[in-house]
Length: 226
Image 1 (cartoon, helix red, strand yellow):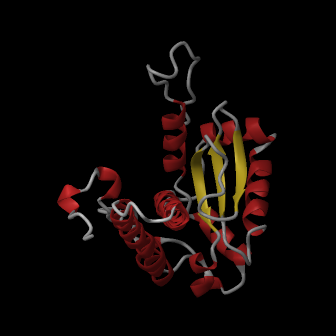
Image 2: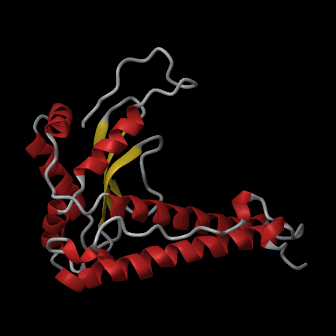
């Protein structure tokens, strides 16, 4: 049976994701070369977008096959989860780059409150990232559903604390730094921290804590990191 055309597909199966452009000039980052950033964006992130589109379209075709064994469909569903995670985490990663690496006072106070001191948060975030060096993964500062903040060690694109919202995302896959630093992951983490866009991080926190009338009626005030 021929797969349905894209015009006949429901939104979940259209496979029309497009790469988001870099929100900064990659030639202006400190310690991260334009060659590295463009290769990462085009090949790894762009490749994940293309793969997700192909997976979504193939799912529609396989769904039309009534005789297809569930375990075969399940293999592609696992691939869908991996590719979706890769796309979304890469988008968050690039979006929180391009800044001066200097958090505002409010963000420093929030992290100091949650971790005991801002420097203690940073030390733990760096250690979490370096614990992934030599293997794949992501270091993610995230807000949990109760408002708690944690640095998470994510082994792949899917191993992330359920219900948490990423605030700061660091790609620790080797492709994110090998062109510039080889195996020197610590130097890459140093460079990343110098280019964090803390305004983006603060915006994500505001969005994560903004009350929604259908879900958060009666809750207290939200943070406003500014």
